[in-house]
Length: 176
Image 1 (cartoon, rainbow, N blue to C red):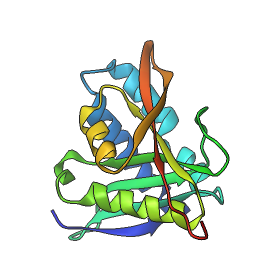
Image 2: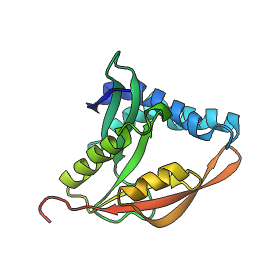
Image 3: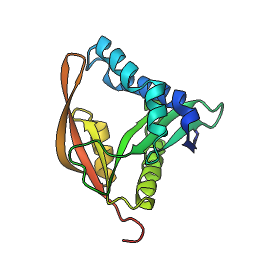
Image 4: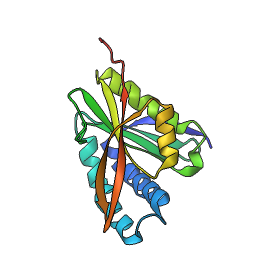
């Protein structure tokens, strides 16, 4: 699978929404209630949600597209942190999603590289993220990229309580 990365803008909100909903479904089908997944995706992965995120000056996103045909395959989005563990100077990797057929192609590492470079260029001291405690593959990926656990958070999807691990990666920003 050959892909290319490019900076995403507000005009890419529908692409990010499509990837976000589809990858959430792909990851959590069979783990969470189907109706809860559909409702969660409608609320959290609608195009308007992405327009709002992409319209904020502290946000940046990159979309991966198939080299042939340009279909969206994944994306990463960084923004001001909403995690209770956040400290001044932190930035949050809100989402880094890709279809499973791209796993092992270097896409995840490329998206992480763009996100980290952007955070460092902004002068952030740490890159934070939350990941579902049961997402073993993602947890291993983040550990390989220098993230360490700094806390936990709970959230609901439908009637189910879920738990995220909150991770942080120290950054070496410009001018430090």
